[in-house]
Amino acid sequence: MGALRDIDLGAIIASHGVRYLVEFGAGDGDDTAHAADFPFDHIYSIEPLHRLAIQGAFRHSANQKMTFIHGKGERGWRQAAPEIPAEQPVLFLLDGASFEADLAAILLHRDVWRDVFLVEDGDPILLDRVLGKTHRQSLPVAGLLQAFPVA
Amino acid sequence: MLAGLALAANGKQHRLTLKFNTGAFRSDEVFDSANCPPARYLIEMGRRLLEIAPDAKRLIIGNPLLPLSPDQVAGWIPPALAAPVVIVDSKQFPLAYCLPRWLVEEEERFLLLLSTCDAGLDVRLLGLIAGCEAGALAVPKLDIGEFPISTTTGWFMGRGRQEMLRQCSSAAIKTIQRNKAWRSLPFAAYLPYHAGSLLMLNLAARQVPDGFFAKEIICASYRDIVDSCPSPLEMVPLRLPWLPRDGSVGELEYLTHALERLGPEVRDQHFFGFLRYSRLYNQTPFHLIDQMKFALGHSMRQETDTVHGGQPFASARADLPAKPLKLLFHLAGGWKLKSYRADRAAAMFMVLRGMGCEISVIDRPDLVPYGARLVVSDDTALLTAEVRAHHIFIGVDSFPHHFVRHALGWPTVALFANTKPCNSDAAERSDYRAVVGVLPCNPCGAEKECPMLGGEDCGNFAPPDQVVTAILEMARAVYGFTEGA
Image (cartoon, rainbow over all chains, first blue to last red; front, side, top):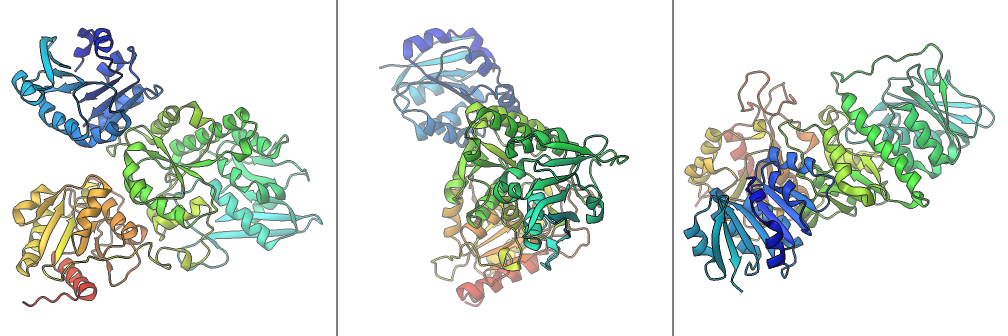
């Protein structure tokens, strides 16, 4: 990843009131490090590769507002989901390669109608099929699909 | 060997030597635990000295890391002072601790925080605990030299471990300095990563109600284990991924980040007891649960205190008709060498299916072509549900086996190979069998590759026919199963 730097996170936070960032496929935490400068209540980085997850976690171990979770999609998300209030909008950052499975995992534990989605190298048709009833897509920025809540 | 002596007011000495227990539980032996910090032995020696010398005023206890005799220790008796004294060599390595009786009797748990490898830290810590200035007394012309990185017996695992003990002692000093009411602060057991270790800690803690610890530092991702196998120790979640097994991260580095991650509120309000291995856990004949009980404060003086001499933690069985016999296999351990070979598993499945048995297998998709139903069980609730839907669990030396047997009490056949069964099995009963090969290289201590023959398979698993026999014997004994139609 690393594409988050080209996104106006401040504007998304202001417009949609997102207080939490959940990143699937966090790598060693580049995007997370960038997002740490914004006023999120908490940032969750879910990374399936153990080596990368621990690197990211060590890099940010003193920051209590960031949590690195080692796990694939649903197993990782299962650890974060109970800590996020249902009424607080979330910004999800997904990777196109595993986006469909990760989104399915998210929907198992959360009603996402308030949430914002950024998908790197994702398929817009697939995104519309899953979120079309509750979200509208805007033009991609820096390779990131963007889906915002309709309501 | 541990050495100590008690000094009475009239100058009379009581000398004591304790040898490591290898299973006989003699009166001059001390329980052998790799899971406790070395200072735990200092406490145990203190308890035993006060038993043989109830009138003692001072105790002099040799550093448990060093092979000392009571005669050596007797040659280092410092002047009669009320304050604690650390006897040191020329390089300030602690040789022995001279402690006033009350310190051992009344403040025993704080002795667990001694590093036993840094006299400077230990003098400061003892001074704070005793509320007076502690002293250091050098032994002339004695230098123990460079402490070995490790020994062939795994007696002590080197400089990295010493540094970890120093970190815990340093953290304790800071905690005392920052809290007026430090004597009432809780002790937290540091054993954060590896599911099996956490499970055994929780089981051990149930049997040590008055131990040193009130809390446990556990990776947050293991919350489900704590829910499924509760402990009297309160969980302090550590929000870090658990330690990778590939060696890419050292335990010392992990501890440093763990203390940082816990944050100042947790760090300054707890004392941390280092319960990771200080030595090789498989040099002792005792179960890991027993090794942890000793670390938590139990003296472990008789066989009935142990897993093999006591009652099971739980006992249950399937509420299912005896046929078809439903078998749940877990054949992939955390190490490559703990995994059962696919061709051998296939042979087992063929025979069992021929008898009408239904086979399920956890996390081994490669065994599906041999007639097994694939089960995913990445948390303990899912695992529990699957176990309850089967008559017998058959598993390698890994978390599911320990959980199924000790937490659920389910009929279990355990498959050991390159690890010693006695360190992590259960007491042999009609509903528990541990099967293992007969190769003399067990335990080899290897994880990824056979050190003798190479390759990722261990040749010391019991062959399929022995495993099938064990399963059928258990099915007959527990469920009244018969092979005939």
